[in-house]
Amino acid sequence: MKAVFCQNAQFNVADLPEPVPGPGQVRIKVLRCGICGSDLHARHGIDSWADMAVKSGYDGFGRSSEQIVFGHEFCGEITEYGPDCRRRTSTGKPIVALPLLRGSKGVNALGFSAHAPGAYAEQMLVSEPLMLPVPNGLTPEVASLTEPMTVSLHAVRRGEVNKKTVAIVIGCGPVGLGVILMLKAKGVQAIVASDYSPGRRALAKACGADVVVNPAEASPFTARRSGITKMSNALNLAVTTLDKLGRLPIGWWHAMRLFEALGVRPKHPVIFECVGVPGVIASIIEGAPLFSRVVVVGMGDGAHQFSPFVACKKEIDLRFVGTYSPLEFRDTLHMLADGKVDPRPLITGTVGLEGVEGAFAALRDPETHAKILIDPYASEPGLAAQKLNAA
Ligand SMILES: [Zn+2]
Image (tube, rainbow, N blue to C red):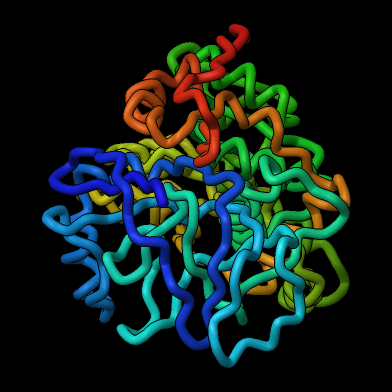
């Protein structure tokens, strides 16, 4: 079978042996595979990720010297069951799967390990228990976005948003756009999106952002009234509140305890950091209103620096997200299949295996591309690109 592997940061299109499914494994024909920002990073930075993975207790991460077949965002068709499978879905049916493979070398990350080759290939292995049939005749293009959209759903859930939350999305690459789509699906009524690129801002609009901001021209934190922006206002509010409560015939502490029990808190936005570049968290802490909740989704590996003083005084609630649950994966698939979320604006091109190298180069330009899919059986390497409209 044909596959693309990465070794020493070079891509090679090669004929590799067709994978043979072991116990509990299923071989699939890959229909579509998304190119993820993580893949772009892994091409040159996989060793530093592998080092960090070792620190968190996983030693199966790929090394740059190994032949790694990327691809963890995929949709395929069942071609062969291995031994000890339950075979609940018939051969030939489309499926998606959580990107983990259980085999003789333990459980490994599909697309990031030499023990679990990914979907930049005509065929691959998945774990049967992690596989879900694609419902409702959902197209392979959209089904292959289940994985990245699950990351976005998880981020939004960790943000504990409600319909009245002002959500601010910093960075409108595929991750930020996914977050906007999921916020919209959750019924959030005020979504502010911020990106330097006019093309990305246009996509943010297409995904449902209510306000788009060029951070070179305006602050995303004041584009909508989302909370208290000045410390002096917060202090004023505290004194005024106590003054007002002091006029009640009961002790102010009784009233305050009641407010607490009811969950009354100062209004604050939920900010999604979807850039992943050093300096961004610091600038959010500086610019964000008091009591903001910041959800860090941008997973760069650069070292960040910020002063806790400002974050402490503002009571910034900083959260990090990097995984998701199988239930979120299943729910995302069904949200896509039921038409509750339509991620098609994200897809800006499709390439064959020969086009992977070109796609990686094209993805460096935020004006042109967001998500490029691989169709391993495409006869043309070509890049069906559409130039994004300027916002
Ligand atoms: Zn990904």
